Length: 165
Image 1 (cartoon, one colour):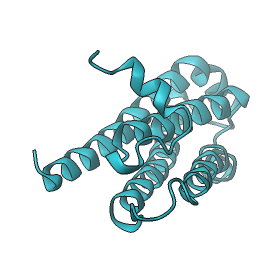
Image 2 (cartoon, helix red, strand yellow):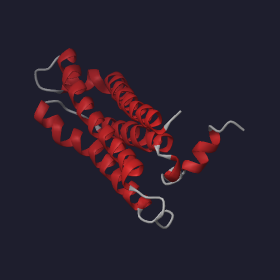
Image 3 (cartoon, helix red, strand yellow):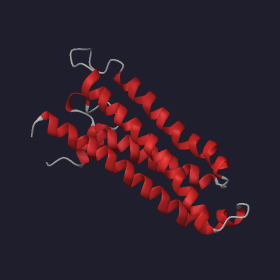
């Protein structure tokens, strides 16, 4: 398989993971807290709450998918191998991970009042776990180009679990 094909496949994996995270956050969030929060929201039935909650999960998931795509594009096209190993790459990865966590916590905090829906702490923990944990950290472990595959923290241990040995 040539480099272009691998690049396209990895971009597809990032997009598919973002869509999967959106679906997981929507399903689990609706299941866990939906009825109680919909009745707590002013003049809102459960289906209307779900519709607005889906908008919220879509916005958060797409922005986190862009964070993962940004790391992949930087590692694939901007970083060079002739630099000192790890020079600044882990700091760059940590910065994008911090942005992903800020998005996962900040978008619901800012956007939910604009939509007129109420959220509780479970939703914020759920978004941080799904979007930053699975949607950014795990996807960057599996899609980082080979020259930088050990840049994300704990990637060596996670990749050992999935090795063919």
